[in-house]
Image (tube, rainbow, N blue to C red; front, side, top):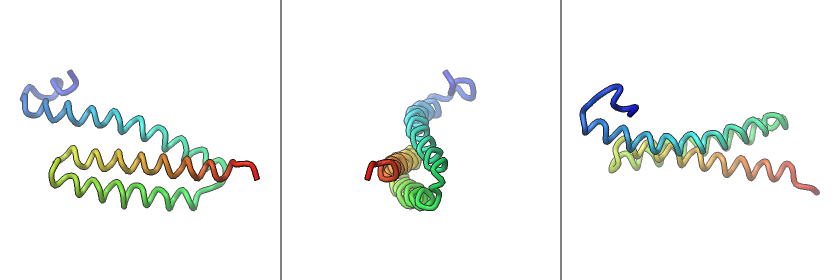
Length: 103
């Protein structure tokens, strides 16, 4: 229904449906990683999360997205973005666990 607001072209609507399903997954992963980044910021831990973000977004997300876009077009970039967010969420959760574990 959202795509029909902008177009009635069936080809465009098929692309919209495929991208919106990936965008839904994107939102979930982004919510997790941004929460963890905020928690770490509350611990005054900013340098390591910055490095994690660089690795996750630029190396994994952009690199994989660029590679996947060769075969999957726009969906490839979105899959790369999701992979970057998942990588960030995993690495930030590991960082949080390391900071909060009992000695």
